[in-house]
Each structure stands twice: as C-alpha cells, then as structure tokens.
Length: 124
Ligand SMILES: [Zn+2]
Image (tube, rainbow, N blue to C red; front, side):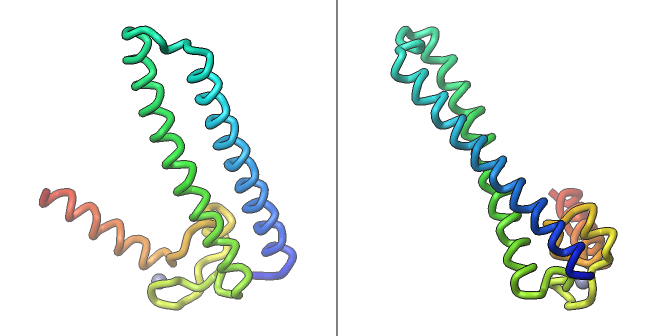
C-alpha cells in the first residue's frame, strides 16, 4: 500500500479515536451530573438509574474495545505491518483494509476463523 493511502487511513483512525474519546468523556460527565443533581434519589428512579448505568457501562465497554482496536491498527502502521496478516504473514488485500482498517487477518484466515467460531456455536 502506498504512503499516501496509509497516511489517509492513519488520519481516519486518529479522528475515530478522538471521536470515541470525546464520546466517552461526555458520557462520563453526563452520568456524574445526574448523580449530583439527585435525579435518581427515590427508589423508582434508582432502578432506572441501574438500567441507565448498565446501558452506559455496555456502551463504554464497546467504546474502549474499539479504541484499543484503533490503537493497534495505528501501531501496525507505525511498525510497517499494517497490510500483513498477523496469522499467516501474507499481504492483506488493499480494498479489505480500506473497508475495514482495523482488520488484522487476510481473507483466508478471516474465513477460517469465522468457520471455527460458527462451528463452535453450532456445537454449543
Ligand atoms: Zn492470513
């Protein structure tokens, strides 16, 4: 992959990271303000608060997962391994990387993995 494309992917990854970080910060602030305002003071609201909190924790967890995937992708660019499959070491197709810059597997390994996970699901 050429440098210009790599740099544009790097910019995309960096802007997604800052968006996610801003989103996490906003969610944290909203929750704290609601705590302080005592909106959830009575029992009925405390159940609602529990729901909100679980929903928020789930979103937060996913946001952190995406953040770490994005950071790994950036590191792979820095180390010049961005288009190498981390399983078999062959080149990952460029259009695959453009469509999904956080992918670490070539199409063959990805399909193997999906077959494995779906057969595990089938057995379970
Ligand atoms: Zn592979």
